[in-house]
Image (cartoon, rainbow, N blue to C red):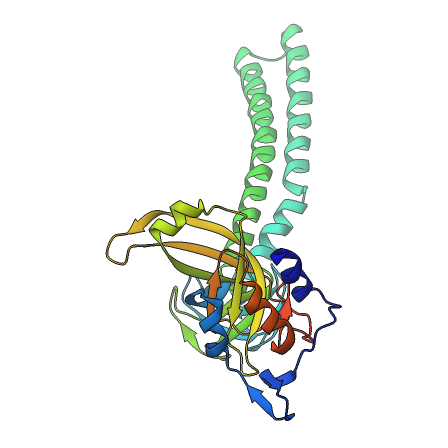
Amino acid sequence: MKRFLLLATFSVGVAAVLVPTGTAQTGTDRPVTRSASEWAEGFDGAPSFTKPSADAVMGFTVATRVTQTLVKGGELVDEGQVLIRGDDGEQLAILDQTRMRVESDLTLRRATKEEALAKVEFERAQEGFERQGVSTRELDRARLTWETAEIGVETAKFNTQLERSRLVQARALLDQYRITAPFDGVVEEVYRVPGSSVDRTEAVIRVVRVDPVWIDVPVPTEETIARGLSDGDEAWVLIDTPDGGFLGSGKIIEVSPVADFASGTRRVRVELPNPGRLPPGLRCWTRFDTPSEGWADEWSRFGTGTSSGGTPTGSDPGR
């Protein structure tokens, strides 16, 4: 019965009264505001805060000068997208030269022709030697010239393979002058503008993933053992928002194998869908069983943001 009531609470089409801005109507029709902190008293969850599920502060691996910033703070980016470019003019020229050498077959063609000519001259020298018109020394010279030309062909083939390897290296070196998005996410901040000189590993841009968000919950060690908390278990999260709070359901994705003796807790990481893009860093409370029937009933009547998928009512989708 309890679970039925809770699921009804989180369904999109529930026949419940969702009062905006965290207010409830009294018998005199006067709104009564309930803050997330007040809701948290009956929710009985462990306090914590939300954070990005991925957070990358990136820079160049070589000292360079910023030539282009292709994104700005708040912009959505895709994995592999170029975000910042350094001064890569010289490396682009090296890459172009290496590509030309790989695509050209002139060296191999020349070596092949030289080998063919040396072979013909050796065969003629051999015929002349049989007629006693060519000395042994001249025959040996013609034979060694032919053999050297054969080595020249193999050397040309080897050099072509070597240039292909150098082409891969040139592309890798060029990548050092470009910062790309390591995952789908949103730009939190760009720290440098075009023309700025930066050293190796100096912070240039920060990219975060805000959907889903993570919550590292300090749970009493005894509770984690008694409940047998493990990956995939459900978790309910109440997030502090200006309109009175948002309730969503997530799942455990990690339970620390080590307990902290000083605090008597273990870190339990919860993943919560956030397609509405609530900003990470909000205060929240997390519990690992269904909220009480009374609390769920109150929330169904007076709560402001509810979704079993973690989406605030009326929010826009995004990363």
